[in-house]
Length: 346
Ligand code: SF4
Image 1 (spheres, rainbow, N blue to C red):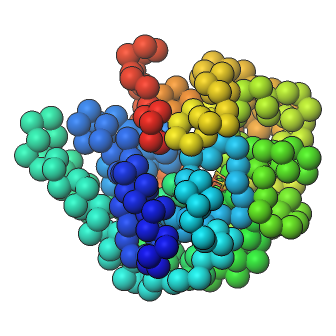
Image 2 (image 1 turned 45 degrees about the vertical axis):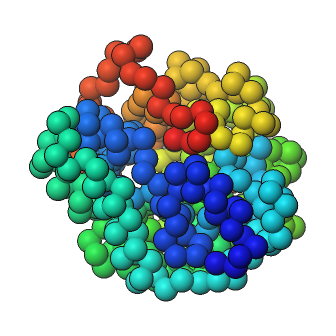
């Protein structure tokens, strides 16, 4: 990577990101640790069967994004005075090499659990062979020019994929030769004004591009999800929820997930802890959104502060985790610790 970018990389390494090549990062998720040591998994397991200990959390665009959302934990070039155009990913590592590297780093990150007294050896060896890749974490994954090939490489190895995008690259999504196993479009804003205020686009027409993505969502054959990050005091008003209902009606996603914003990382400089909703509040807002959209509430995960809406009778399971599905028991309130590290990120 160019030397002038190194200060950014150094901060990310301190935040426990691991670089695979020049523009891709991997991070061990909080739930990977919980799954290995306590057999507790995140909501993706309960909803879709994704095994938390076998999930690689990565982004192929560590420093790059077309937005500067208020709730983002991403360290930005200007935070450190680094000369980098964060809208253009100009270096491209080979996707086949990258996936090999992701698996190698994932194995290194979990290697310390081998022989750990609280880790079932069977679980350890399951984790050694990851079965899922989540393209999210930080940055905008659709800015990686070889995204289609990356997804092909993930699937060729028998792994499933979740692609999480802010929806600003409908051109890339339209041209994907390989769809992700599940496509997420993540939203906090419900109209152009709220988008310009909260999502803070770095490029022109970002809201219009988002709308193009939403219009295109019904054409996907894989399941799709609109993820609304609920920021208490911002997008929880009836006006906002009516705006989201219109967007959901346009995109006709398979799922809507309403998930609380978490007060972590750099976002703490721009938002307050009061913006982080308790699960009961996420549930209340979800009930109203359900009324407005006609999407019933299908499930929830208290530990992840997320509620799932869908017109399906039950979610499509992509993995073999949490065989009891939506009935997977969760600890009683107060029995689980905070599922985030406020100094870094989840
Ligand atoms: S789109 Fe994602 S990575 Fe980009 S600024 Fe917003 S939260 Fe951060």
